Image (cartoon, rainbow, N blue to C red; front, side, top):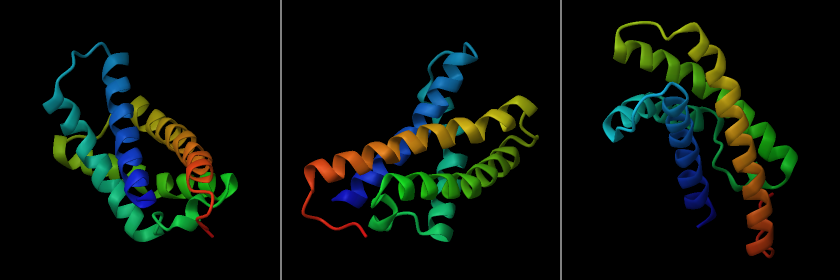
Length: 130
């Protein structure tokens, strides 16, 4: 169950990143357009998970580990997501998008993973995540 919550939360965080970006750029809400933006980052995230093995429960054993694993996964996933998005659109992303994508995704993901540490320790205190 904790792994399912982690996966669902990660995907939700990526979708929130996309929705906030669309809102910030005064784009109307469109599920299809939002998914089109999110899919390359989701694929990048999944690829990074395969490389970094982030979904080990030990990755949320402490706040320090949660932050470290979230940042490592972002370092791998965001460039992959940007590259896939570029291929999908047939052009490079705007400079500002490429510059803000990493810190925003990393910030959102770090907050989410720290919340996971707290929630899992609160609701599953007998489970060892080490």
